[in-house]
Amino acid sequence: MYEALPQDQPQPVITRTLEDYTSEEVAHLVNRLRRKGDEPLDLWIVRLSEEGGAQTDIDGTDGLRFTGLSKDTAVDSNYRQLMTNQGEEMTTLFQAYARAITEQYAMPSDWPELNKPWLTIREGIQRLVRLCVREVLTIGMMDEVVNMPVPKAVRDAIIKTAPAAYKSLILTIMLGSPRATMGDIRSMMADVGSLGNWESENRPRLDMQEGCPPSRPGRGEERPPPRRDGGGGPSRRDIWSALVKGEFLSQKLMGNRLRSCEKCAGEGAESLMCRVG
Image (cartoon, rainbow, N blue to C red; front, side, top):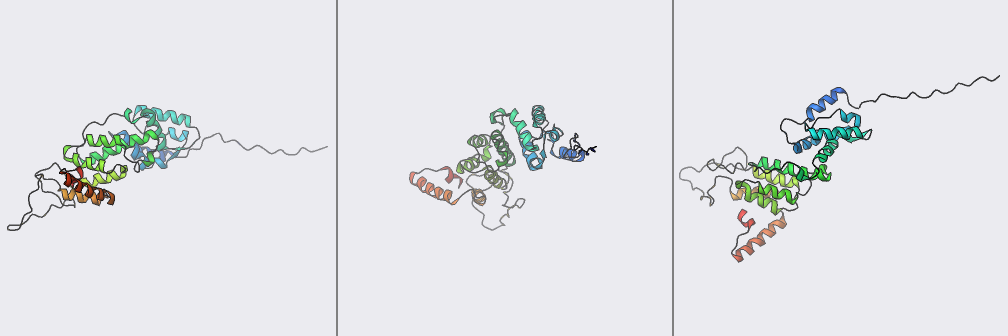
């Protein structure tokens, strides 16, 4: 008579899904990353990337817990559908919302137009970032937005909507560096903004350090000659110095400018670069 050998018992099957984030972690991320007030959607996706969304790994189950961050009905609906179909495949919170936005705005022309003129350098930089973000979302290269060459359409839009006080210099920045990246253009515009408000004609011109008014010559001291343009904004010399400091002018460009000036002098004409200089 043979004794039956004991059979190995099968391993128990886990049927409960283990969440990667606790309720407290989800609540913290939602409060920090949710779109705020009237924050533009194209600027919000940048903030989502920079403040942790690009490092937040999610699958479909986790992703559904972050529905509604964009506060845009169509985008949130797209995101919810993407997460429902995501399954166990991993992505990031930023990539998922970038895809949801792209499904709503497949081309840069699908976005609401930004035709209103910008008034300050800060607004101009913001306009530059928004237009570049719309371009890179279309081609799926959001991670390279800072290093992307600024497209001609974006340059034209910034020039077209620039206020009169900045028009000449913005034209010079955009046309004088055709291969500059978005980060380069942003830095050049920021350097210009550090010179103060160009539209104020009566206030004293600020020195290169913000908040430090220039010293006025005392009685009997020689006063500088009046400026040709009669304006109260930064002088052309300060503008040029700021552009050089911001690495706007490479040695090659400086060489081209000098040759251009010599040519202009010979022809009796005045080029754009000469006028700014």
